[in-house]
Structures are given as structure tokens and as C-alpha cells.
Length: 312
Image (cartoon, rainbow, N blue to C red; front, side, top):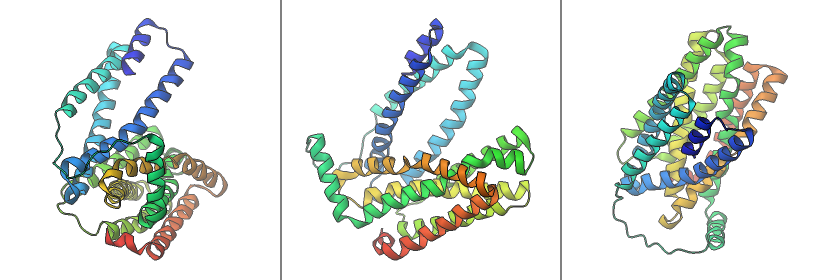
């Protein structure tokens, strides 16, 4: 896809419909790539170290986003868009060669290919009988809508409330990236991580309180501290839900569990719309406070109705 983009850019033949079509293809491929990546990480490190493995994935993703943005921007400015796209395509090719040499740890799981409709039917049955999995899917979607949507109003927070402009917004985003990276480092250092469910409940509560803190922070420095904490909690939430969803189902369903995780985080656009509407109606600070309180209530509800979650 990137190589095709590069060829079209070199020929000067890029049109809007082509960009939209190839973006759709890339998005569809990403929706398949994410479940495979997360379940394969489990295969490589095993159940006992799944949190550490997914933490390492988070580190790699954050570092890749930072380095990739710098490299692509520099190459694009100096050599043109087409060359930048070819560089990115080449890096993907190198990554493919590296991944193709990885080996997972041996398991007793047998692979029995079945038709797609049978796959879906089997997974729906699992969700009907596995209350913990269903609750994880619902809570993941709720946290995505109420928590991750805070990024939507960061530009308004920087320009309207703080008056720091584009440079200040860049600092806020850098701190946000640092928070996610720090959470990845902390989780990657764990071994035989226990009490994932209890930790996740703590993360939900702290996430909600962090949003309230961002909304109430009186100055730039305190907002940076609150954003750092919220970003770290958001990253930890992703890693913990990915690991617990895989641990809550039989091995043969782990890939489908990660597909359900991708489906759950697909609720993100609803959160952006909700946060934007709230901010327009009541202001940035109150909007963050409302979502923060709602997240805390989600944590309370989850604690009450999903006692099995605490055992993961």
C-alpha cells in the first residue's frame, strides 16, 4: 500500500478517491494486524509473562511512532513525499523479514481450521457463557469512550484555556507520549504478574481521577503532570485488557478475543463526539470532570457486577 502511494506520488497522479480507497485498505489490514500481533506476543512469551510482552509491544509502538514521524518528516522535507513513502515501505519490508524469523514457545494447542461463520458462532457462544470476557469487552469500550477521548480537547485546552499556542500543544503531546512510554517500560519489567484484574480496576479509578485533575489543573505545569499520569494509565489500560481477554478464553479463541478488543476500541469515535459536544456545552474543564466521574462510576459498577475479574 505504501509502495503504491509512493509510485503515485512520484508520477504526480494522486487523487482524493485513491487516497480514500488506500486508506480504507490500510485501515482494514490494521484491524487484522492488531489481533494477530497481540495474540502472537502471547505465543512468544507465554501466559505468565503476557503483561511484560505486551508492555514491550507498547514500548516498541511508542518508539516507532516517534522515530517514524521524525524520519518521515525529515525525508519528506528534503527529498519529497514519494521518497518518504518508499522509505516507509522499505522499513515495513525489513520488519516482515525480522518477524518471519520469530518462533513461539511450544504449546499443546491444536489448530483445527473451521469456516468463518463457524468461528463467529463459536465465539458468540463463548461470550454468552463467559461473563468475564463479555464484561471486559463492555468495559473496554466504555473506557475508550469516556477516557481516551480526552485527547480530543487538548488543542482547545492549550490554545483557549492556557494560551500556550502550537508550541505548548506540542509539549503536551510529547508529555502524553512520554506517559505511554513510561507505562510500557513499567509493565515490560514485570514477571509472573498477578492480580491483573485488581490492577485494572485501580487503573480505571485512577484514570477517572486523572481526567478530573486535568480539568481542574490551574496552570500549565500541573496540567502536564496530570496528562503524564492519564497517558500512562491509558497505556496500562490497553495492556491489561489485552492480556486479560486472552487469559479469559481457551487458547484456540485468543485471536478472536483480540478481534473483540479491536471491536471494542472501535467505539473511540463516539467518545470524540461526546467529548466535543460536552466541551462545547459546558466547557473543557467540566467536560473532563464529567467523564472522569463517569469513569469512576464504571469502575464501581465493574467491581460489583464482575467479581471474577479480580481473579485474573
